[in-house]
Image 1 (cartoon, rainbow, N blue to C red):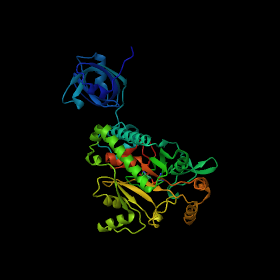
Image 2 (cartoon, helix red, strand yellow):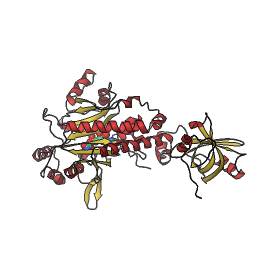
Image 3 (cartoon, rainbow, N blue to C red):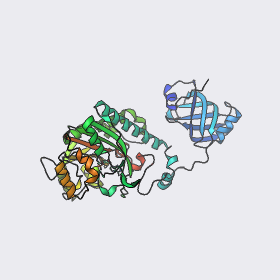
Image 4 (cartoon, helix red, strand yellow):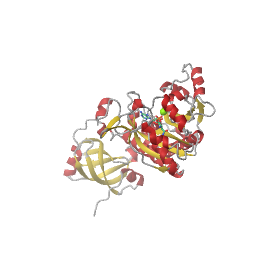
Length: 433
Ligand code: 4AD
Ligand code: MG
C-alpha cells in the first residue's frame, strides 16, 4: 500500500499521543549526543522535533540521522509523544528515518549580511519568516478575491506588454517588440477602464513595473498590483470600495494567519481597529497639518515618506488624502467639481509610517478636456487613440484604484523593507537570482 504522509501541523494538532505517523520534509535544526539525535523537521505546515534513539531504529537509519545536515530531505515514521519542551508541545519518537537527499553544508548560517542573503535568496526563502510572509501574502490575495467576488467584481486578465505609459514616461521599462517599441505595464488601469463598458465592475492582479532608480525601503521595480475599476462610481464611492476591501483583507489575515503574525512578532492589536470608515482629509488640509507640525510643504509639492509618516502619526487606521493638485497627478483623472485646482482622487496612506498603499481616482470622461490636458503636458495622442475612444462611445462616470500588494504586506507584517514582501525582489541593483 502507498504510504500516507501527514502534514506536521495536522499531526500535532491531532493530539493523538502514541499513534504512529509518517511525515516528510527537511531538517531545520539538528543536534546529537552519542546515542540520540534530535532533528527538528519542517514541512509546508509546521515544525516538529523528531527524536531518533539508537535503540529504536535500525543501525543504518541511525547512522543516516546522525550524519544528515540541515536541509537534508527526509521521510520518517514515528510515534507522537507529548513533550512540553518541544515546539508545538509534541515530539515524534522515530521508528524509521530515511534520507531522500543529503544536503551539503548549507551556506546560510546565523548573522549573515543582507547582500549575502539576497544572493542566496533561492535558499533564504525557506526560512520560517519568509515562509510566514508568503503565507500572509497568499491570504491578502485570497481575501481580496473573496471580497471582489462577493461584491460583483469580475476578475480579468489585462496585458503586460503595452505601448501606453499609464503613469508617466519617466518610470517606463522599454523593450523591443519585434520592430516596435513597447513597454512593460505600469498599471492595468486603462485596460480595466475598457473592460468596465461590458463588465461594469472589474479587477485584476498583475505584475507592474516601474523603472524607479529610487532605492527606498518601499520601491520595487517589479511589484504585484491589485487594481479595481468600477462603472457608475464616483471618487467617494471608490473610497468606500477601498476601505471595505482593505478591511476585509486585514480581517482575513487576522482570522487565518495568527501563527504567522506571531512568528513575525507582529503585534496585531492595531490591525484589529481597521474597519470602515477611514478618515478623509484633503491635500490642502494635509498641508496645514504638516505646517502645524513644523514641516513646510508648498502647494504642488508631493508627499514623501516623512510627510506621510507625520500625517498618520495619530492614526491607527489608514487615512485617505483627497484632492491632490493637478500638477502632481496623472492626466486621466477627473477635475474636482468643488475645487478645480484639484482632481477627484485619493491616496490611501497606511499608518505607522508605512505610507501610500493605494492610488485611486475618478476618471475624466470628457474627451476634449483630456486631449487638451495631454497637449499641455506634451503627451503624444497616437498611442492613446484607443483609450480616448472609450470616451466617445457611451462614456459613463467611472473610478478605480491600484493597491500595491507588497506595500500592504509590508504594513500588515511590519516589515522594514518591501523586498521581504516578495520572494525574488527586483530592485535597481538586483535581478538575480
Ligand atoms: O499610485 P500609482 O502609481 O497608481 C497607478 O498606477 C494607478 N494607475 C492605479 C489605478 O488607479 N488603477 O500606483 C498604485 C500603487 C501605489 O499606491 C503603491 O501602493 C504601488 O502601486 N506602487 C508600488 N509598489 C512597489 N514598488 C513601486 N515602485 C510602486 N509604485 C507604486
Ligand atoms: Mg501614487
